[in-house]
Image (cartoon, rainbow, N blue to C red; front, side, top):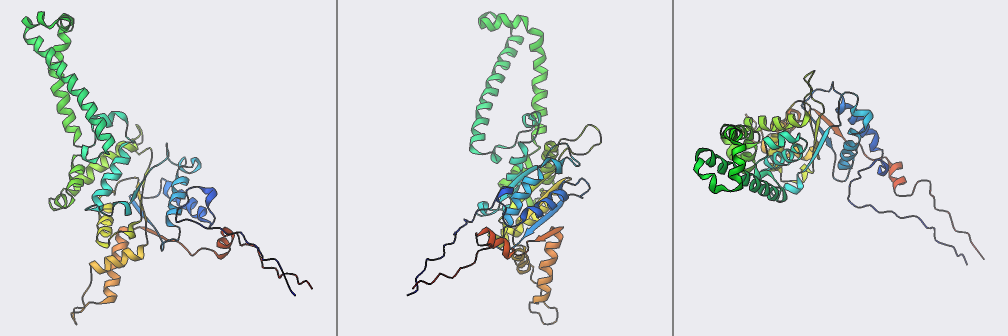
Length: 362
């Protein structure tokens, strides 16, 4: 009677989670990431630029994008033409799909992430509107506002002593100290209003962006999108920090927009248009990580074309409009190729393994 031992194979399973390090790359994405990093870090690459990494669900788009982010900050790449590594920020459209307007959510997210990279002086002189801050940062701002209010109250009290000398004797220690600071306090009377006026004028660096976040449709209807774009560009330029000589930026900004095709079609299209309008600045690169075929179909549905002769929808004209729509938004599209069978077998631990027939025993 023939008996034998079953052949054992190593079984590997994988969660739906993108990789984020080069040593996790099992499918050869690193070579694509290196090529993109060289292109995006090249100072001669014209900007603004919109790049798309396209492929069906599960093809590895986000894995490639995360490897690209890592490679962008490798020193031998960014030192080719820049002083510091690029600023990178992420916007996951799926996590904001319930937002009334994805374009407004994108503007708020990008502004918050890039604002952190601004010099401290700019952050103090032109803080972001409270509506664009996280709850924790809003709490800290209330604390600082309380401190500032107390300081202004002290200044106001000293000014009262300046104009009413008879009150100094009743002010105790502050009255005695005031006698030594009389000239300096008098200067505060002029300096404080000037400083407040300056802060109010500089504060508008993100005022229109905050209004757009609160009411994007109204902002678009009132024609203030151009102002929002300019203010967002000013924040980006502050984070990029221009050189004293040469007049060019010290670093680039690369914005990754992921999971776009998993949002409602109308919102996804609105966000594509908003990204083109708001992020079109020098040395800013937008990377769309999405199945562009689905976005193209959604655009074709929105801008359906009708045959002038028959008066009925024309599928060919409609498809052409969908493609042209994306061509205007995306300058460089990369379609992920199918995974190599040998690489998949290696990742599953099956490379080089063959079933061996069991030996027969009598």
